[in-house]
Image: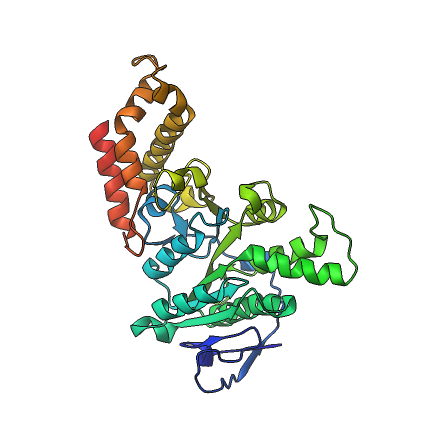
Length: 349
């Protein structure tokens, strides 16, 4: 049983629920099972409302919903934490629970300094277990963050759960499993370590009973930029959507470096008008067409007029790239994002 409740709002704690912000001890009057409260599959209501991320490319092209579980997947140093920071700044939620698991201590202090200030502080709880902590504490920190979010959802609140990163949770579970003598299976990951992240992710979502929701946002580190890494593959299979960041796009200076062709929201067609979905598909087709033929275009081997869609993609390439780019710590709400997409493709038709 883990301590949960209102006392954690406005505070930063470690995996044991002890304050790391220099404040008074936390006296929680409620407890919640570390493994969550199992409910029937039909208690999970569908995703029906849009979730505003504050990032133009995500709002317009991979629209997410309240109660969706989303993964941000990339190699090291491509911008996962920066994109997560942008979403944490722009997203609206009644309660924000942040689990910083296995990350650098410097990132923890930076995050707390930026997001635990002003009016946001009283609705935000941070659970931070840096990389130098024992694996059982890292795993416990992830469970504490998820349990806090579950308890607030049980009260009927709309919760945003941010977990940075799911891969470090899997690493912690792997260390424990190997110590217990479990054999390594998929590239050294014992079965229980991959099952641990599946159980953690499944706890987020909408509750039909309370009317509350947990919108889960998880970063996933692709070791060696390998999108078929066991943790990435397991996360992608269980999440309701994923954002893939490309090192190649980052090296070209496009930030956030979202590979829009590889990114997906599995609930988008259910929560946006058909016209919006059609425009998003059109944007993807143009972007994919240019990227597939980029080398031919740059070498001058492509003859204009051979492929009308590619001609249009070449003509619009600058505008498409500008649409996907957005300065760090800036916010573009959902409605202006869709309006910008309509203006871009409408004018170019």
